[in-house]
Length: 373
Image (cartoon, rainbow, N blue to C red):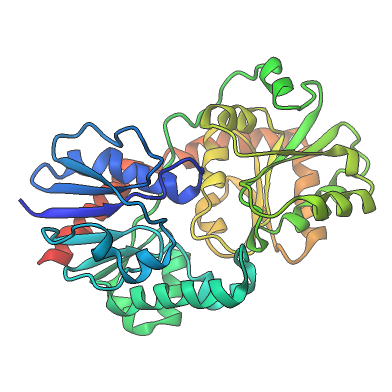
């Protein structure tokens, strides 16, 4: 049987949106394609099996996902000689592949707006690294999967030669994301006062997420609403000291709470407990927190650009992320007008119900078959 290799190294100790996307592939693709065999490349700290499907073999790769080894020498780090198709799941396409490659390009911010991206080490290193890998993917991939029509438009405008190879495979929402009862004791264990309302912002602390903007928006929207706090759930990247200083300057310093990455159960409870999700990103490939919040009945206030409008539709309020006052007005409406909040609480789960991980995996399996023809 044909052998499909899926790079699953984002599934590991550090939570991320891409990890959830890859896990959905692992959960559904093998059962959707019993006539195919799968080889899954694992993170060294992913000690448990990723799946119990019989048509799957798993192998640990010691090199990090976004590493020089992945970029230039992956076929020397793991035996890919029997692989009929390789699925690169995190934007960059490895060099030296002798088989067709499907690359999932979630977004092309490194090419269009690198200043929005993470500068974990230095832009002098990271920018050319990611730009090289993404450009290779756009030039050489047999097929390019992306996660929204907005990302497809960006890709086709940037690289017209790739246009006929791009297919949208929209993301899903985990069944665990649903409205749940809020346990005040769990909130207290997370450091949140159970008696206070809060606005939730979820995502890694990098420029495109616009967390500075979130502080400004909250400060303006809730200036006279002293019973509301702002809670960040951030992947660990930059320290939040600058956000704390900004909040102090704007008079809301005591109303900010910072949580590290939390598990899915706690995140689902936070979505269920929050008065609103504030998601003022400048760009998103898809924006999983939007879908997850809607599934939990949490009203969404987000940006009217990139993929956000596509994901939220009429189930949230939107404004220009470069206009903090406009976004603050939308957030204040949710905080102060019960009828608007109730309507969004009803619309959100209905909107999220159409987002299906099995359909996402089926779209990728279809791409595999086309690319091997």
